[in-house]
Image (cartoon, rainbow, N blue to C red; front, side, top):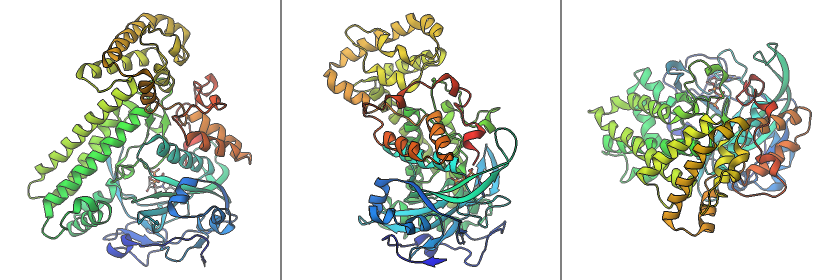
Length: 529
Ligand SMILES: Nc1ncnc2c1ncn2[C@@H]1O[C@H](COP(=O)(O)OP(=O)(O)OP(=O)(O)O)[C@@H](O)[C@H]1O
């Protein structure tokens, strides 16, 4: 491994320094007891080439444009070289997958490079996804394909610009190597281009990190991890320090994890994002959206839709269930940390904080999306009625809400939202019901007597014009696989300002075309990783 200083970063690797790990472990070791991490070096790749980067994330980290375009940047963020201070490791965690305890999982293809300290003092962990095998890879290769990496890269940044709490993406680097996936859409393995995303977050701790020491009955380790997490990632609730604070502090921490999770999920519901694989190993302790695998965006409003083809039967991770699945995941966290409490019932307050925060955020969303000054109880019913109408008539969620701001509340008609219907017959059939709803909505808006321009601006700030529809990402992927990365750059550019009109870019704000209907979910074509 070559060392050098291509990028000006300063590291302070507290996770390694303050928590027990396995300094000697190499790749391909299955069970790692009593260790929360294992040192592992990224496996160098043949020909690293920078395909795309997030200018905002680079700026936040203090990395200059000239550094980004030097070959050393691609080398570092492909895992071929280290910056001084980087100490690569894979984290050990477990998780509940599809409702069942799956045992130890760990970072099978994610390798953390270290905790970078930005100029402002913020801590940003840098993590390569697809950088080769780790002790937690089991039989898999530790690699990622270009298409799944493009999806992760674009969606991380799109979500950030939509105002949804998320892990970020600094870079997308082609490896120059082929990766073979056996799950391909025609049933045959096929080599395809490999890539590595460098994702970034203040912490990559997940619910599953806490579940593993609990499952192994290692209570000292569990306590150590909780205290570490509070000390490093929740300094504002640490107050007078951990000394003697004990249970009250842990309970306050749990309640904040619950509240943050509620805020995250309420944003998902606001923008029509479906995570697709809300296993507890994919639930961030900071309430950040993490693991952009089989995610998807709602086109026609359908609360039962999931993009995850492997979840087609039970549809556990369907759009409309996300708030309750997040709650269930938090009950798993509560269960995992319960041995730290003399009376674990105190954790119910945290779960209640989830319910309260979700209700609060949801009501705020309703008010903003419908253009109301504040959400009254009757407005919640109005929103529910709209959701039923949208689902029954197969109406595009994003287009409808965006166009709702164009309805004249003095004389409401269906015309401004007509283009959001996928089916003409359904539009005709549901016109009276929509007419009735629009009339009641308009009457309610008039009660607020808010300046129309201000109302429109507020609605447009909650109802994005541009979201990363599955087919748009797929088109960019198809071009990239042919060697043309411009589609990724263009899509990233559009998604940087999702609430703006962006004249000339209307093509990115169209209903899903008919040809893309079959691929509206996460077909194996786009999502197997
Ligand atoms: N190609 C792979 N090689 C090694 N391990 C893998 C691979 N794909 C998935 N895994 C591991 O399988 C488990 C579940 O996978 P999942 O798809 O949820 O995660 P992921 O997308 O790889 O990573 P993350 O959750 O870090 O975003 C994790 O332990 C993950 O590291």
